[in-house]
Length: 127
Image (cartoon, rainbow, N blue to C red; front, side):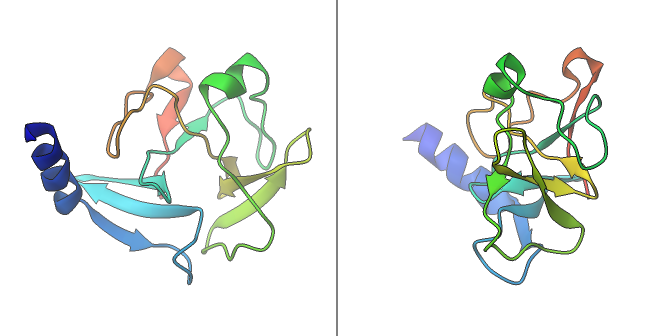
């Protein structure tokens, strides 16, 4: 019960603003305390990878298992600054300002940012 109250308090303290015109946008901007960052529709933190190139993901195989790409369909309305890039398997990955976006498998609940700074190449995605 305490865990649920803590989570409710956390979620209540986070201010969410949709970046696109529709509620089903694949990514939104969130703010917790003084940190503004990007998150997926489930409010999980999104990350960028320094080894990516503009508009091109370089995270595949074992990397993509640990850092699942944020994917979407072409039918979804994307907000300003967002685009879709094609991965080598044909899926469409969401990018922000050309940077592909990823989740981190060790983040367990909304607001977790445990992937920030890993190997000095993974960073919380920020607007």
